[in-house]
Image (tube, rainbow, N blue to C red; front, side, top):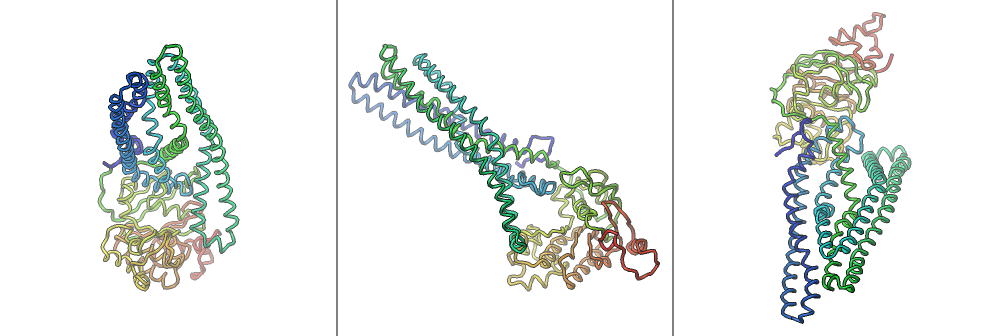
Length: 580
């Protein structure tokens, strides 16, 4: 069943884990059988020393040997089955949680696009999955048997029981000390490692720019600082953990030795039999084995704990989406009233009190100096940036009344930084949906990109790399424009759509806007280049995050012309995208 994103309900990770609970419960049953069967070894030694040797019975020895071999083979089979079930539990957890974590990572990317800890969410999920399916869980499943084994040692003789208990307390103190000594170094190492990996990935994506500007060494040094810091903290944690693990192993080796020594002394005094002494030694070593396993796998457990916390934090910062009634397709009527929007992680609004209204079929041009808030307004109009105040309505419904996937079907968006994904040109235009080829070609024709695309070696089936590698800046922008127009969305928002276009490309853009306008859809264009303004009928001028002017294009331009009254005077600085 799909996991809910409703913030009022338990988190997706908790729900996924709870749905895997029956599997882990069955594993507890397997652990019971395994630990009961594990008693075959001590019992066999006990009986051999106390009965078989005294009776000198080869038949009894053969029968007991056959029985213990059968039990040990059964134990091996059950352990194999338990491991396979544990792996399936990890896969089931991933199957349930991965889609929700991926969606939340995408949602968090809009609010904190440069957060490396959130960008590594899928790696954190893999860490949790591998730990759930690994040795730490098996050790914890066997841990409840520690007191049972110790009780059996007490039944052999109280002194043997107290000996094992003493060693167990020492191991427990070592485990707690291991956690205390390594918690901070491991957390710091994980954080700095994530930062270093993110810096390396970002450098790879911009390797051409780094080489062209001679920044390779400086950027490498920046990455190296985070990498070295991660290694330093990791070395500190490993050194401390190594000491604790070595001490734990020493104590584990001393457990059977100590139990044997105590048992031997008791046997000399005639308080226990030699067979019981041997059985107690084997049982003592088995009793404290889970603690040794837990300490040995502590790093994996701690890494998973930190990963779980980061995933939990990711759930808290992303707004859950409740199941919503599907609204009819909007016409494109847009109302913005008193809108204020702040940048991610900031309380200072970039946009303040923005108000305007568009009807279906209007084409709005948004101009203003750099930093005036044009891009932030574009992000708000398509539902990426959440309003801090005011309202933003499409056909009378606020944007949060649509689920993000549903809203995306009705919105065409061309961001300032064009992003194309690895795949074919057709897949990128179709937004990686299962759409007919005719729809892809229609969108490309509307964007004036069809002739350019068919001129490529494989046409629409041309493979491009992440970010649009293999295409020029202008080609990427025209493909992205076709993607924005795909599916005839009633609201189209274009942020600097002609930034990388040449003359023919800009002419194609103007024809596309005219065609969209003719079909009765709403278009909002953020631009610095005034040539596009010939295609708009309304104009919004932003300055300092506020509306300086809004209205019919010609009236706004006339109102902002210099007071000289010269009809052909050059555009004002506000329209030219420069501060006066």
